Image (tube, helix red, strand yellow):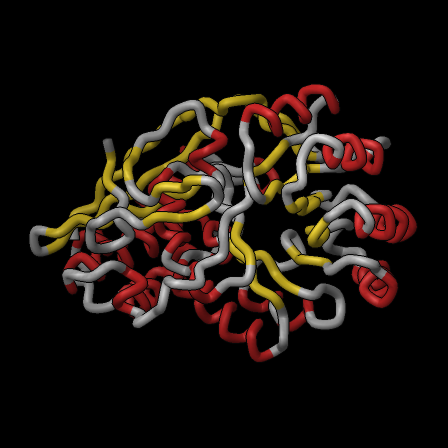
Length: 336
């Protein structure tokens, strides 16, 4: 296979703020793998929380360039198993390679990726649109500028209940709340009780992942379902979420790609957990890959391209929360 790396820095539509950081630009890396006249694309974004930068991604992938370029792809899963021991300390880099391998493999079959898996897309969930932390006036302005059926509201302030009350005055849309580890037990229970009366569907990662005892208490008493994010990074975390959360949010970049994500999905279903995939502000390259997992899911947060002021790719389209696949094999993503 031929390996090509494409680093980008994309501007956000608005400053993107969550409980622990703000940013105006999203650095990301697109990976291209070519074989037998076909080319597959994968992507991963940088993330300060996990100490991932684009230079680090490129360094770790280039360290194995000779092996990759001498590799002949048979299945994405076999390629992942080959690369995992080499990149187990940088699953973001492994994700980009795995997504590119899946795109390449499906193109070699002349099929869309979900067709390779034999999935039915007729009941796909809709994606939410994220409203980052801001002044309540600006959060209302974003709602009004971007009418949407489902919003994910980033929280973690001293005025979280007041924010949701004010936002509710301006829309009947479904709300999902993401605290990004910002709360404690009492705050989570208090907020859950209030939000249950305000049309909030669930709360994502209310407390730090290490607070397992606190999550046990919250799980037993919460008025709303709880979805794990920072508490569910890789395959080994899925079983540990049982009894602490009602569902898990799988991020392809964090777990190492589609290959482990599908195993996580199967295990979560066996455990009776709800399933969601999230985004890390990827462009349409990474978002198009996520879209092919939709038939497996209960919820999806794949609004990355909608949050960006610019994009580097064409592929999946998102209109009023509904996802439309590109009429191309593979994931459907192409660089502009």
